[in-house]
Amino acid sequence: MKSVGLVVNMTKKNASHVAGQIVTWLQEHNISAYEHESQYCSISKDVLAETAQKFNGLDAVIVLGGDGTLLNSARLVAPHQIPILGINMGNMGFLTEVDLEHLFESLERLVKGEYSLEERMMLHCELKRSDKIIQEFIALNDVVVAKGSFSRMILLDAFVNDQYLDTYSADGIIVSTPTGSTAYSLSAGGPIVFPEIELMLMTPICPHTLFSRPMVIGANNQIHLVLNTDSEDVMLTIDGQNGYRLEQGDEVIVQKSPLHTRLVRLNSKSFADVLRAKLRESGGYH
Image (tube, rainbow, N blue to C red; front, side, top):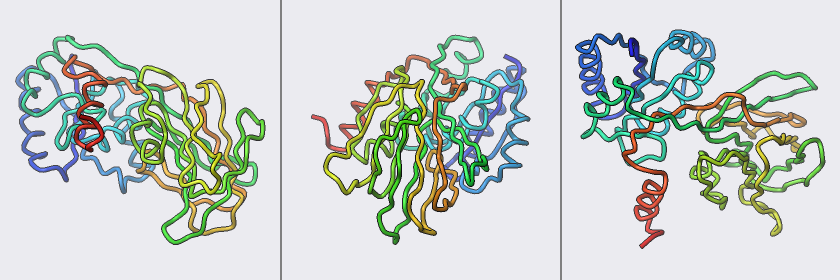
């Protein structure tokens, strides 16, 4: 291993100090480090593309933060398929792999190649307006169409592979990966899916009909949502981080991305371990 990227969420306590320790450790092991401060709430598309290009050719990316920082990093490096090691700087997350107390022993294993790679399915999203694609996105967790805080319920025409499914009267719809099944989709009543399964979940948010239930849709299908509401307060959000205001008639097309997020796994904890701990934390498991 010759070069490593380091993404740092500077809002986390002691993040700058820990980042400095990691850079020093890497340099002592003759590994060059490219450092990037995560600003996923405000980073522009041009800066994102420029930063992603700088990550090209790296052997790995170390993410210092939480799940939100890792989600941002996943979209950043996915085009280059670089392995990501998440260092947890907050509460236990579903994506970060290493706690600070095991930081340096984990770095030793990383540079020695003593790890496995876990590939996570991603989504590709197109936003069409007047039959023209005006934006494209990739997501690790989810693609969401939802109303704002003060607007009325919205109407969304839903299609699967161009076959009309239904018109949803709801606060919105979440299309998520298995990775995203433990995020917003879970809060909206969707099922938990183990991450090695490749599929899409379509979960309505506060639907106004009793039969509107979450749906499991094969990974090789295409989900097509059409906004059938005249409102200035409907947003398309990607992983809860990037947002785009929608207009009536806009089409959101979601399908499996050819890209994957490649997570470094050191066998420190399994998905079942994290899930059990999270359920205990929320009071849902005894």
